[in-house]
Structures are given as C-alpha cells and as structure tokens.
Length: 83
Image (tube, rainbow, N blue to C red; front, side, top):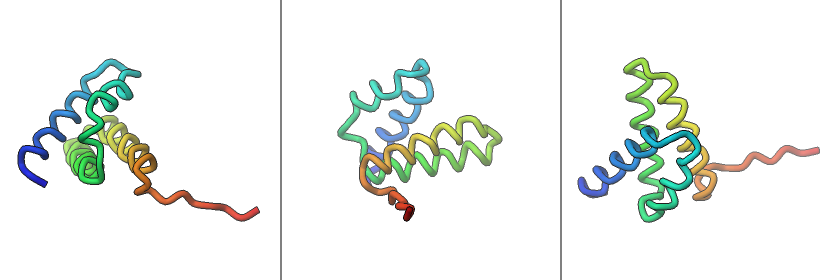
C-alpha cells in the first residue's frame, strides 16, 4: 500500500466519521475504488487507536463498519449453524 493510498483511506475514514448519520452508504458509494481489504485493515487500526484514546463510541462505529465491509468483500466468514 502506498503512502498516497493510505492517506486516501484516512481521508475516507474522516469523511465517514464526520458525515451526517445515515449518509455513510453514500460516502462509501462515492469512494468505491478505495473499498478493499487494506481499507478494512486501516479501519481496524484507526478503531484500535480510538479505543486506546478513550473514544469507545468511535471505535465501535469503525469496527462495525469494518465488519460490514468485510462481509461485503467476502473477507468475513459466515458461520453456518446446523439445525
């Protein structure tokens, strides 16, 4: 991952955190080219930093977002329960 790409990820995370509630899908749609496994990794890194800084709500939001994107990208295993 290039430094330029990493900065784009950080900008997208800032945009997501700062956008009005409910407009996150629009922000993500406008930045589809940035949504990949490295972006999910960056989300988790920022979430970890937020948690260490005491921003639990911010961390939870970013972790939720990372989980959702991981599922959409096929990176998050779906657990199958037997009946």
